[in-house]
Length: 115
Image 1: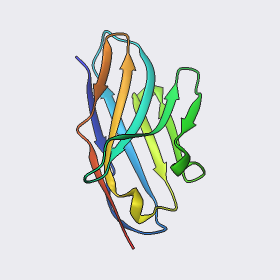
Image 2 (image 1 turned 60 degrees about the vertical axis):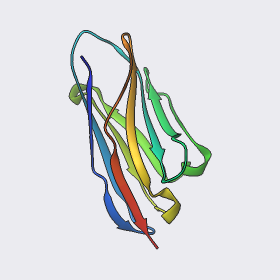
Image 3 (image 1 turned 45 degrees about the vertical axis):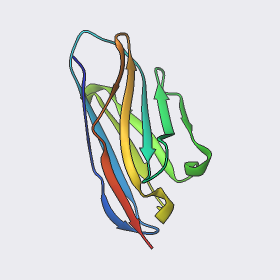
């Protein structure tokens, strides 16, 4: 069984920074990719960033240059460093992983950016 637990969300002023963490637990699988998504009120969930085996990363255009995804394989943790935050970044942020046994999601962590 795979479990993902996000943390690090909160309230921050525009221009500020937050770092989200997602700890993966469980056994019997290999992780192929780790992802961050977000969902703002009244909107569909959207992809934010990814990191795949080998360390390749990619970002949605609206966060390029501001957000950085990274992982610590020894800690089974994926991070999302968010800088220069904007009010439009306000959303629930979800961690997701693709493994040899399927796709799993965390419960989400709220990020609120005030203007």
